[in-house]
Every structure is written in structure tokens, then in C-alpha cells.
Length: 113
Length: 109
Image 1 (cartoon, each protein chain N blue to C red):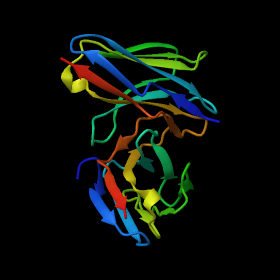
Image 2 (cartoon, rainbow over the protein chains, first blue to last red):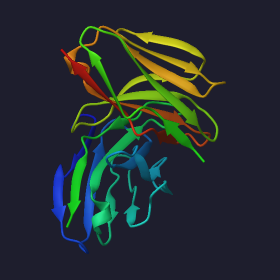
Image 3 (spheres, each protein chain N blue to C red):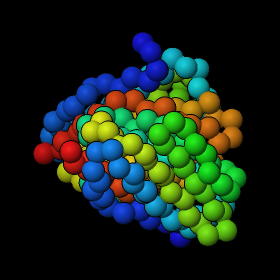
């Protein structure tokens, strides 16, 4: 693994189903983020974690939950998927020390039908 | 509220110069980032400005005026591979990134 890895790459999900998007980084970054990207809108922050064991809500947290049991992993769970959660999801990380660049995973394209 | 504005789409010719503008209104300011995103790919970091002025990095330069809430990304000697979306993002007082919707740059031969 080099950098930040997301799985799956894409998924079609039936509405009402539960789904976990996985994110793993090997850069030992303290901060991790989940964004969704929709056409015509900027990246919107769903949840974030400044360090292992802590999480926080972003701009659009409803319907999503996260956990940060260790430094490397930051899974995003949709408890009961709805069509409005159809989007491209990006996981990102940064070393969290002030204003530093974020590194992004390749994204998960999720379609809820 | 917090707001980042940038043009939706721009077209330029291979070999030319293009300037992509970004204006912002945010709660605090801890720097402005530019990212490049090719279609279907992840955003990748291009530049960071926290002080007023111009930062040059090869064919790409980024300018910031904090008093005007304004930045631009300047791309010189355009190549076909520069066709991508360019995302402007401001880090607010809580060190959270606020993102613009991105500018899709189309390069024509």
C-alpha cells in the first residue's frame, strides 16, 4: 500500500441497505476526512478525525457515521442508504499540523437505487 | 456564511496562458490551496498561498490577495494534459477546508 487506499472502487447499492466504505492510509497522518463530490458542487465534508480515537461532524453528516480505532483506518458507514447518497466519495488524510496539504484516495463511486 | 466562487468552465488553446480566478468569503483564513483533478480521478495538490503575492512553480503560478479575498491560478504553455478541473479551497479558522465547485478547463489544439 502506498498512500491512501479506498475500497470498493464502485458499488451499486439497494436503498435501505447498510454499506461501509473503507479507507486506509500508510503515511501515519493524524487527520483523516471523508468528502462527497457531486456534479456542480464543491467537495463537501461529511466527517473528519483529527487523531485516532476522535471524530467530528462536517458539513453534511446526516445518514453517515465514522470510527477511528487506529491511525491508519477510517471507515465510513451508511446505516440505511437512500438515493440522495448517490455520489463519489473521497477519503483524504493530512498530517494535521496546521495548514498542510491533503492527500486523497482514488474515490468510491456509489449508486443507490 | 462561507463561500468560494470560481468560474464553472474555461476554454484555452494549447501553448497559451490561462488564468483561473477564485474569490472567497470565509470564517477566518489559514491559507488557500489549489488542486488539480482529472476526470474520474482524485484531486492532487498544486499550490498553497498564505501570504499575499505570487508563488511560482514551473508552468503553474498562484497569486493571493487577502485584503480582496481573491486568488488566481496561472497556467503557462498549456498542454493537452492540463485539461482537468481546478479546485480552489480555503482553510478556515478551524483548519477545515472549504471548497469551491471547481473550474473545468478545456484545452483545444
